[in-house]
Image (cartoon, rainbow, N blue to C red):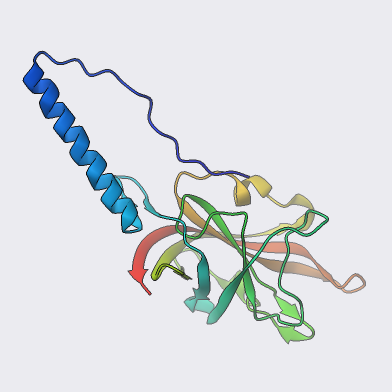
Length: 207
């Protein structure tokens, strides 16, 4: 899984006079200054392009449509290569996969939460009820809130987990919310599917 910001290929601009060259140089310089100012404020939107934020650790996730809200703790991978998740003893705690982009930056940020744990409801117990058009808010350490709008929700067998759709590169800032779902294998105490919410960054607010 990787994210990258591609730079456009260099092109040659032919001009007919020194004055034209100076004018072009000034325009380029002003464009660079505007870009630096946009990055320094943490927000940027190219003409007709996506909203993108600089990297900043997420601190809280809120899904108003299902009354779910939790602080976020950064977690990585377990020794077996599986995603680490909060302990079942704290089922209302959500986590951010710290090898994914921070929410609002280019690429798919990944947030995980339990459906239940230790006989208690989990933070994402109602995640399957989320619908296209719902909002997901992620507070960030830089004092900004990234607002994502849900595009679709899938329930997929764990055996056919769509890794590329979840972790693959995207042309904009996106978010994935993941929990367990589907049929419960009572013998193995394990749900056979995952519920995955896909969302895109559509707004930035002050926290």
